[in-house]
Every structure is written in C-alpha cells, then in structure tokens.
Image (cartoon, rainbow, N blue to C red; front, side, top):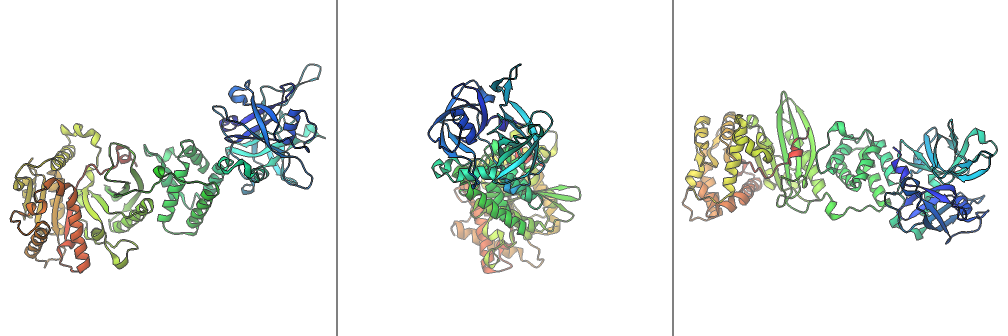
Length: 633
C-alpha cells in the first residue's frame, strides 16, 4: 500500500539544468519539506549556512504529472549547526497542491520503538552513461528498502539498506516510509560516505521534523502537520484489549449504512482509523468513542483513554461541527428489542435521535447502541435497560423521555413491574422509568421493514399476515376516525383469550381496553390473542396482588379520565380518553397521560394507585430502526 506515499513525494530539480537532485514531500496543504542541502544544490549554492528564505525552486510530483514543474518559495531555512538538534531542513510554500496530491502523515518517533522496523523510500539517484560520467539524477526515480537500526547523535537515526540499491545521493529529502504504520518515520538526510558498499545511511527523526515545524508560528495552526492519524492509531492500539467493545461500537456508529459485519471490520486500529479518515468520519468516531467510554463502567484504562482522547482533540484543534455532532436536539427515543433465541435472549438497542423528524425509510437519525445476549431467565433486563439508558444519555446530552420496549408475545407475562417501576440510575428519590418517561410496550415480532409491507398482504405465513393487519389498523388509527367509538375501541372485562381474540380480530376494531386486572399467569395467552388479532394499541390493568379491588380501580380510572377530559363526559371509557379530538389524543397524548398517572402513583407512594398497574401497548411502526439496521447481527 504505497498510495499515501506516492501522493506526497516530490522531485526537487536544479534550477540551471532541470535535473533531479533530491526529493521532498508534502507535509501540509500548502507546504513541502526537504533537506536544506537539497534546496541549496537546486539553487547552485555550495553551503547551507546562508539563509535562502524567499528564493524560488521548482518541484514536480512524479506519480501525478512529473513533467509539470511547480514553483515553490523557501519559507523556513534550518541549516546544519554543530551544537543544535534542528538540522538540514527546508520548508517550501506552494500556492496549491495539484489535484491528487495529499500531505503525508508523520509518526512521532518518541512513541515508537523503531529498531528493526522495515522501511522504504523513493528517490532520484544519480545515473551514469557508459563511460561512467554522471547524467544527473534519475527522472523516473526508484525504490529502495531496508531496516531501521538505532538512534545516533543530534536527532538522527541510522538505517541499513537491503540487497540492491541503497540510500545514496538523490534520496536526500525523501520520506522514510513504514508500510505497517502507513506513515513517515523520518527524512533521508545522508549516506555513509566512507563506505558506500555498506549501505549505511541516516535519517532525521520525525521528532526533529515536527519540532522544526511547530517552532514556526508564521506557518499558522490551520496548516498543522498531519501526524494525528498514526498518533491516534497507536493510542487506540495500546487500549484495544481493555476498550475493545467501546471502540467497536463507536466504529459502527460512524457508518450511516449499512451496519458493518464483524468479519468486515479492519484487522487493526490503524486500518480502522485510516478507513474512517478516508470517509471523513474520524473526528465523529472519536466523539462517539468518548460517549461510549463515559457510559461504560468505570475502569482505570477507560478513564485514561478518555483523557488521552481529549488531549488528542485539544492538541490538533479538533472541533465537531454541529450537524456532525452526536448530540440530539430534542425528542429522542430509546428503542429496545428483545428476541428469544433457543435457551437465551438477544437484546438490541437503538437511539432514535428525534421522533419529530425521523423517517424509518432513511438510515440517518438512528444509532445502534449495543447487542447483548442473556442466558437463561430474563431476570437482569432492568440492569440492561439501565445500561442502554446511560449510553443514550451520553449521546444525547439531554433527557430521554420516550422508551419503547419490544418483547416477544410469548414472554409478555414477564414481570412488567420490573420495567416501569425500576428506579432510573442516578435520579434522586429513586424516580422510576414509568414516572419520568413515556414507556410503552410493543411486539418484537412486528419490528419489521415497512418496505416489504405489500409482500405480507398476500403472505401464506400467519405472522406475515398479522404484521400486515397490524400496520393497516395502525394507519387507520392515524387517519380520521368516523366510526362509532364503541365499534373502533373494544372495552372488555373478559379473561378469556378466545373471546378477546374473536372480538379484537374484527376489521373495525383498532384498539382494546381490558378493564379488569389480568392475572400474570393468564396474560401470555391474552397477549397472544392481541398479537394475532393485529391490535396495535391496547390498555390493560395488571395486578400482582390478589386482594386488589378491580371495581375500585375501574372507578378510579374513570374518575381520573373524567378529570382530565372534563366532568361533563358521560360516554364510555374510550370516549373519555379521546374526547372529541380523537386523532390528536390518540397519536400524541395517550402515552403522556399514562406517564402522568404513573408519576402521580410515584408521588403518592400508594401501592394501590392505578398508575402502578397500567400497561400500554403502542406499536408505532414509524418508530423503528431502518431496514439495514434491523438486519444487524
């Protein structure tokens, strides 16, 4: 993989003969770097001690259009000085890099053990005719290869060439390239003159090159040298084992579509960073990674990585544009889906950024949070919900007020009290999810793609037809309702699943209210009846306490709704819920009203308050992950 090097390397030419005499490389959008002695030779000077700032030399990009010469101006001149580390460096300014050219990445060598690492370099060594006379530097250039040996004095590092051509005259100023790191680790500066057959040469370390750059304030911070890529890669590599899950999820969050399979992930942190940089997602990745690290359980390693990421951002002046930020403006929704897989459960979570603008037909606006597997019983779901909630809060930087939980209809007898009455983490007075959020239930079997809706219309598969019927009924709920309410909304005190299914399966029945408390042992059968009847909306009373007075609860229920809609209501219970503006209340207000009841129950601390015993099925197909995110493993 040489392209990054090829797009940066330049050929430096002698002004009088136009012959190549050395190399250089693009270090920033308007700047090149080479050796001071190469620039001096190009100008016909025999010494580097006299400053050449302001003078012009010509270069070309051999892998782009090497015949086209570009004029540059010397803006920094750092000659060799016996008592100083900065040595033999010239920085050239160019009006604009040609199309296709890109600055090279420099890896600070202080953070690496370079000894015995392999390198390559591209230069323009001297060519000779048949009589042994010099014809000048090679116009086409050539490659050379070798290994890094060790540091010597004044910021230089010794190199050892392999069989074939060594680093000789014409390679001065060339970037010393490391294929494994995909960056430059130094600049070729001189060969060992007394023993050319030894193929010993020297490079100026990147630490010296970067120091030379950073001490030139006139170059401006906006043209900072591009070594942030390898530095971030090395940082992530050192924490990869301890923070693997957070790095993986942040990487997934950056891609708008589709979700990357684990087998398609880059094999190293460096390759991941390079891929993200290529797609301009790198800064967003770092921001997501910080969010995941904050949301995860604290550890010394994660805290250290978080701190170093913030230092990395500060050092390179990284800022996230508002439109690229993972922060959510308003109205986020946490969507949790549970699916049963043999003897275990798979729990997936997504964050819908804004329910007011979200469109499930598009990929944007929905972030996959995590996938967890739960072995055996489903007892630790509240703990998982806490984890997803914390992670969502870290992304949103605002409160989560909507939570949709999708469960298989076969486990709807799960103790739902463990969800809406579960204390929210870090909330004072143990405020519960139900008291603070619009918490609604859904059937996970219905969390399907709407793109294939027509295919389910004539499906021979029973669950496919159930999905189509549920969507059709939901769409009718969102349209103008002209039918009498006692036909549209089924209110039943029956405990018979067959009777409920028989009535709810009718085309005109769009919602169900179960007015008597359902015994937990019986609810899974009733949930099955609601599922196969295609009901998208249902309200019911649950009661784990056998002595609970259902009649008193029903009376309390009606009194509360009458208070909300006005005491003059003398119509059936669904009329009291929806009043005259049925569509508005149905599509916008019902979950809010249920949250208010739960909040009242939390405030009064009355175990028999009806707010402690109400559940809402709210199967809104428009609040679902996009097709490709639904297909994630």
